[in-house]
Length: 261
Image (tube, rainbow, N blue to C red; front, side, top):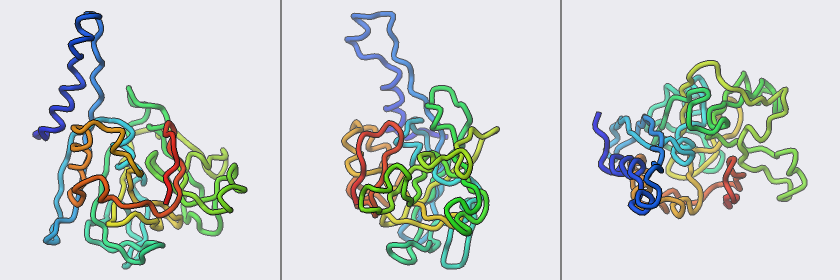
């Protein structure tokens, strides 16, 4: 498999220490950034499906785009619930904000427990027990990945934001009983979904967001890294094409600001 030029140049940049570092500290060698495989299925303009396997850095901004729903999660479509691994680009998903919306992009990767070089929380999944948020919410045990956000009212923020529900990382709702963060015993296939506009969809009876990288995400990327990231989304030409987020979003661990709708 060939590596795109942007990915190859980015990878090489990570392995080559700057000249100034080499001169002042000859023993200092920058550790190469971990790379991983990302699987992408996207809808072309002619209605055909394009499938690729891309190489990219194993960093939160990339991994969050591929890690919301574990294999087996049922997604509500216009033809009924469909397991996330059986979805096809072009299918119509039911959204709370826009009604039926076309699925443009499916990203997936393999989540490896306790992977070397990654933060522990980025190798865990969150198990949500049946009826944790009310009758059939969710309908069965649900496994949410580290890139998921659920529309909920976090207990610590019930008196904030006028009682409005926020898109919340499931791990922030963990109570040790109904919502539990766990390290999977073996590798898990995880997925994320992208529509034309950011929205909430029904997954396992709960409202989860579709993928959006966040307002101003591009300001934290080098030009090469941004070009590589955008190349993973054939329907996106520039960062602003992701549009706005549909609800206020709480940050993932390590983020510094909240996304405004």
